[in-house]
Image: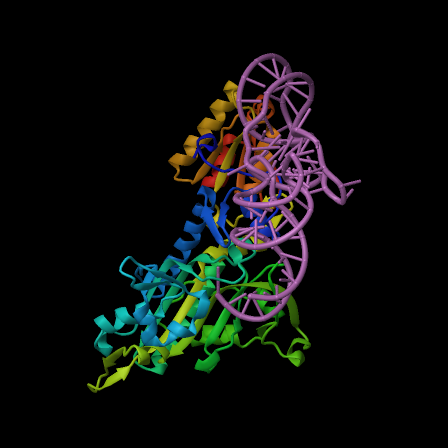
Length: 436
RNA sequence: CGGGGUGUAGCUCAGCUUGGUAGAGUACCUGCUUUGGGAGCAGGGUGCCGUAGGUUCGAAUCCUAUCGCCCCGACCA
């Protein structure tokens, strides 16, 4: 992509409305712009990151045998009346009437709709288990939206729902999602810790919040220090017994400020940190299947009400969470897996035939190698280009300048994360990118 | 929803106390110079001073209402 033909409206100054670092940086990097309270436009750079995050979620869920569907944003309120949540959900649910005065909800979540899909299509235990998910815009009419996308009213959420014939099977579904979540966040370059969460009226202990550790996180969390050196499992066979993985990750202490106990957090090896919740897994039992009569016949030919679980990831919230966990005073530092571009070619002397020629050549070779590359071909001074590119945080910069070309035909290879600059030949610089 | 703040140029903000021609920096446009860390000089204002009433000879400024946005709290992916 040529920067001169693209659309990245960066800001030199901090917008007044943004207080938290991720919000400020997303606005300044031209990723998003605010349309209304808690409602944002996704500009090209922001959209690319959102898509990369979505793709990782999708890929890992598919590996765990979840099946993607797409449910509408608008849901007839009759389903909510049937589940009993029409009144319970309150003012957070945005209600809309159509021209025939029929009432709809802009879905804040989709238990009712997905259960309806299940009950209308699945009749036998032989067709179980099933895990259906979608990545769809949700709306919750928060009384006070804040922190940019971290707590907007409209947000992109991945919500998965498992259906099993009995509790034992439901637990296995839970472990599958639990394990998939470890992999998902690891791939995004995030240090995430599952923490025991409140299960409310359902009871039991099968609910975990996935908390990203970030110095500027919104809430105080406590966890065993060994979590810092625990890596997500690799190459998991999702048909195997996942209980050991689950136990490994839940045996160590981890709790948010809301649920922790005074005596626990004072123990040795427990560290204090800041965190952001990016996902939650939850065993639902028969809460919705009972109300909505989602039943199948078991192997004895008897009808049983199915066991459900729900599993959310705030996809649009993950983006600022990554920024909170990965930035410096110059701007964003994207982990490679979610970066809007893998590399940027910065031509410091646009219009000078030699630098134009070499920059163009590097750009074309990277394109040919299927590298998602940005070419900063703007007619701007070097300083502007350095500042903008550090701000938008693309992992690798290949800097092409007159000086280097005259001085042995070299370019600079800069790693955004470390700030390290290496002087390399064009060939070497290309290999650094293509080889990765 | 309780408490506080704020709305003036694309952005950051001054002007309001004490009413009298709409401002600065930056961005943007033109020209010349410059060209490796947000350049210099010269020229250009792009504005329903959130909106609606009111007071006044005269309102960005005072009064009333209303809307938007931000922050703290309660609440939450």
